Length: 162
Image 1: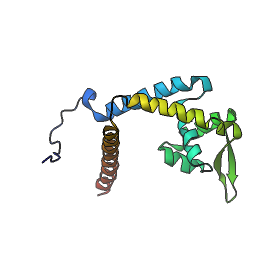
Image 2: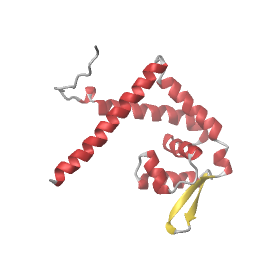
Image 3: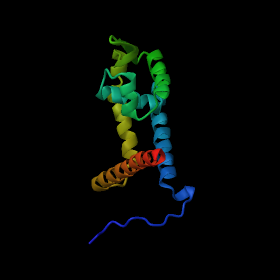
């Protein structure tokens, strides 16, 4: 029987900290993605915005920021650059003059196939040597870590209120 054991003692060091390892992982993903996107004058952050818009066009800036787990001011700068490049357009929300819906332009839509291909290339490089089952397990484990941390933040905030 394979029972999960809770980790009782953890001797902290930066090198074996899962958060630090995850941070390095994200930086490595973005570094390779930035390299793959050089010919398109796009960054990894811009790639993330565009690929989310390929999935769900017409989101408000707030909705898009939530979906990408980024802060609104960070998103605004990225949207400014994408708009300057002619890849997206902002349309005012009639009921709220401060809000905008984000749409792809025809030029932005033209990039869908090639950007999804570049994303797949980076993903395939990252998972090289892993089986489908290992990839699924890794996703499950990372999701569990994320949920644990989200719950830990909520609990810490509740404790602070007491």
